[in-house]
Image 1 (cartoon, rainbow, N blue to C red):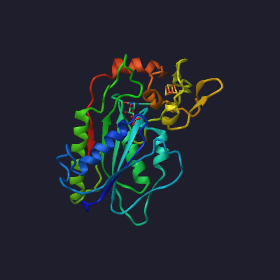
Image 2: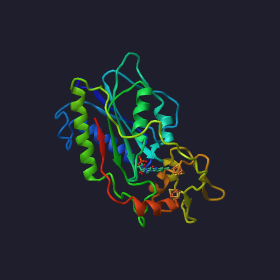
Image 3: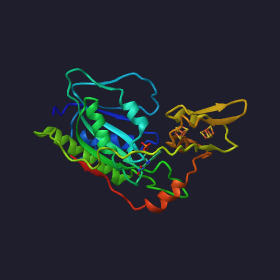
Image 4: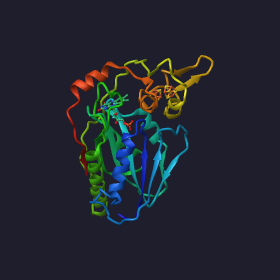
Length: 277
Ligand SMILES: Cc1cc2nc3c(=O)[nH]c(=O)nc-3n(C[C@H](O)[C@H](O)[C@H](O)COP(=O)(O)O)c2cc1C
Ligand code: SF4
Ligand code: SF4
């Protein structure tokens, strides 16, 4: 690899954990503090293309001299469908070979087939994935009363992500960097049964209508009815990502699902990142 390759993080990350991980991997590739295995002193530029709030159709072109780090959340053991839709906008410039690291972040239950799915998506977009990692982030449905992977990614996770980034940089410099490698997961991917879930986050009556939940919603599902002085949520657009719940400065937006208690009870034992190179 030309070690002066610039690094482009491309992510979809409603509650920011997937972006945090992908950026830590990129920092490790670049030998930033904590990524002691990377190219210390290397001078790559790192830029982030965060597609969470970008609902446009405009292409995201990547080309020669770039290495891409993809970061998406796991939903139901697969890549979040909204992430798949947005990443499909990536276009590799004609004739360019663009190395890619694929990362998924999941809420301490399991990532099942998401990492192979993201790898396959990268290949189908014309990228050249050569490393993959599954990391842990606080579960979207975690609450203060019933936490699930609370506070993750934490300092240990970020150190692991940066170390992985260093390993990625070294692999890119080695002969045979693009040889086939094993990634945990199944093909065909697990089927996701659509539950017909119509539950959406709710807003308490004393909401001051600050509009933050409207701003952070990736799908435009939230609006404010000024006449009724109410926050409205469109169940057909809502992907239950909980970005609005996390972002509400007054703690007045909540999402109540029986799944939270299940996760709290059964998925609290700490899981560690898994990487494949
Ligand atoms: C609809 C939905 C489905 C999810 N499914 C899973 C899952 O199958 N396994 C898991 O461990 N976490 C699951 N999660 C939790 C997220 O993967 C996790 O919280 C992740 O860190 C969110 O990424 P983000 O911060 O980039 O939005 C799910 C979250 C949502 C909203
Ligand atoms: S972010 Fe919270 S306080 Fe602001 S409008 Fe939404 S629910 Fe109301
Ligand atoms: S309304 Fe639904 S899609 Fe929008 S931020 Fe909230 S949970 Fe996510």
